[in-house]
Length: 285
Image 1: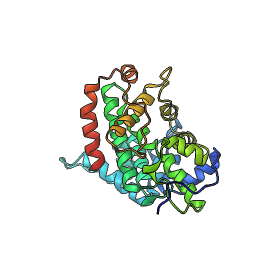
Image 2 (image 1 turned 135 degrees about the vertical axis):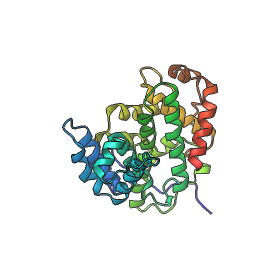
Image 3 (image 1 turned 30 degrees about the horizontal axis):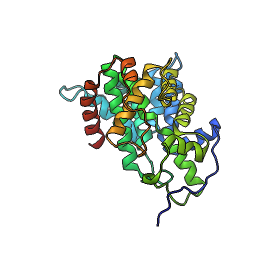
Image 4 (image 1 turned 60 degrees about the vertical axis):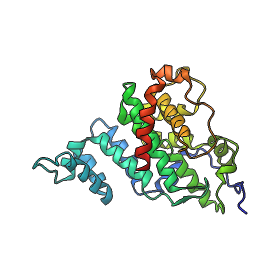
């Protein structure tokens, strides 16, 4: 009979170098995303500086070319070099492509520490990212920033799972029997939660502080004072995921679609129904 508990693992401290090493080991695209963000943050960066970084990843290069040429589908023009593709799609879209590759690349088919499949993990990520993007459009925030933030917010789940597997965790957590929140379970077993891990790693990768702050403050569900709008967007997307039973954990946060948060964003409940439907369709497609 499957146990409802997780075998103890060595607690993971908030050691930046250790967390970065774990993250880099997840996928070949992870180190590339860090290098790209560091390059973009340099005011002297040029397309010619970025192109060699992209060429290190054959799959990413192919995705970039496909994305760039898709815009020219109805014309005779095409992009035939990485440099041309970068000029066309822009560095922010490239960062989004790499982030997606990092989250969807080589995650294990079963996240043993969490007792969930990679399919469920990816579905949850897609829903949150799409919902955040659509909510941002409604409240006049940058939808690309919202999408990227929600996409990278669960990065810490992969890092913590990797850590648990390296410690020889023999059995996954039986999620259905858990009574505590996901963040509480992580804090108890690892010493920090996945949102803290994500924020720390993204800061070291050179992500904009607005994204890191939004992610970091998106777990203070009942404290709205001084909270950045991006954090409110991420929280709202998370509660929509809960209502659709498409989260990483069956235990609800208890926050719900609170009126104060919607008021702070300038959203009405009626606006969330089409957002939820669209995000659900994208997540399952």
